[in-house]
Amino acid sequence: MKQDIAVTVDAVIFKVKGNITEVLLIKRKNDPYKNNWAIPGGFLEEDEDLETASKRELQEETGLQIEALHQLKTYGAIDRDPRGRTISIAFAGIINSAFEVKGADDAEEANWFEMNDLPALAFDHLEILEDAKVWLVNQKA
Image (cartoon, rainbow, N blue to C red; front, side, top):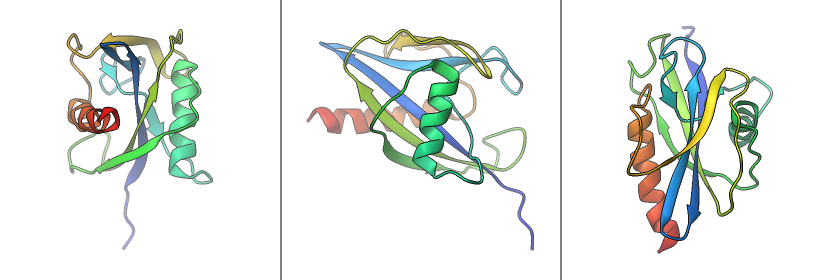
């Protein structure tokens, strides 16, 4: 039996400076959820591992290169992507200094948002972000 399942990766990047925590989001250039904010990410290529894919998508969409990412969780709700069955592996990372990001590739914009002032998010990205926040608190502990 052939399965038609896509695999994607997402990169939740936190910028922590003093008591202020921000998260990096992109504004989607294409459907689905065109012009909505989302966590940077995209489709896994056949010849790359998961972390490499997450770093590649992050760099392509925002210009940010990051050394260390932590594999957070896998998301596989049947209806999480209107294009079809898609499983996403989310990663999380932290930077401690300012980095100017710029939307590129299939991201119209890229910007930092304070955690208490987030826009509506595409897909199930609010759920992913909530899980990443728990991870972040554990990193600080």
